[in-house]
Length: 88
Ligand SMILES: [Zn+2]
Image (cartoon, rainbow, N blue to C red; front, side, top):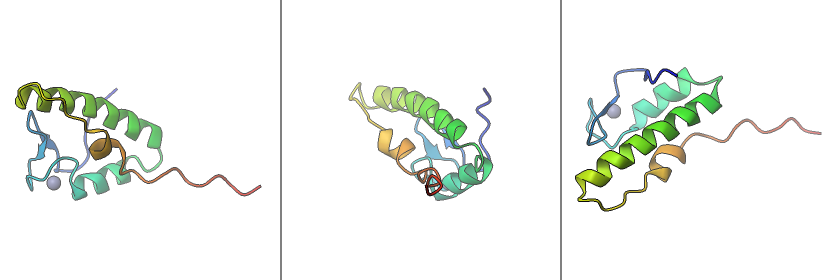
């Protein structure tokens, strides 16, 4: 699996801030680029985000003296739900 991220708004490790605007990654432009890149492959987008969430949690937890960091909402709560199933 590639972990190639679209666009220039990519995270700086280990702080996971955007290298362009220094917002917590994924910032707005990063989300937009990801949604565009993975418009037809939501499963792969969520897979990528879940992988990066685990990596970011490890980094941020060790930066914060071992205090547990939960990034589930930050990484996984923003993609819109899949298209509604077609009506019966
Ligand atoms: Zn950004």
